[in-house]
Length: 168
Image (cartoon, rainbow, N blue to C red; front, side, top):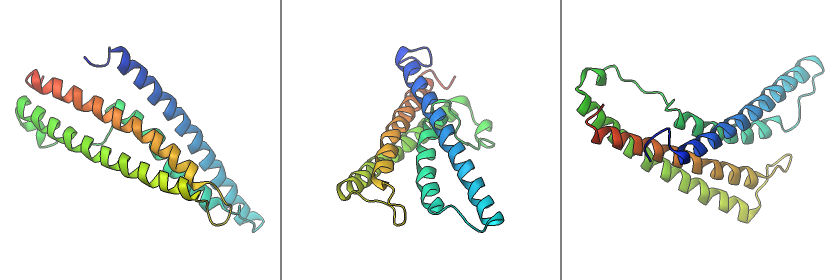
């Protein structure tokens, strides 16, 4: 993989874009649900039953739908006030170390998310009030987390390539 011009990178990038679109749809649903829930509470004293359950499940899904795109575009927050004063080779080494640690952390999170999702699926867990399938959302989140791992691997490879070039 040589970077953003590589065919595999382009395909993965396109998948992350579609996942982000899905996240946008989920966010819109959350927005309308919250709006009508508040409206119902305020005007007719009738909130949407189970809105908290729905919002909780949708929030988890929203995070994993959007984080892959953020990773592919290198959009994660970083504070580089001090590191900008360092020579390029040292900055590149620090960047590589951060990407190695980030990749290991993301792999751990993905693994635990899969374990949790499979446990939820085996038990066919549902929410308390509406009986919404927690297991299904868990599996969707776990599947989306794979793109986070792939995105972090791409960032790690690009960081490694930059380090090998001397930090340029």
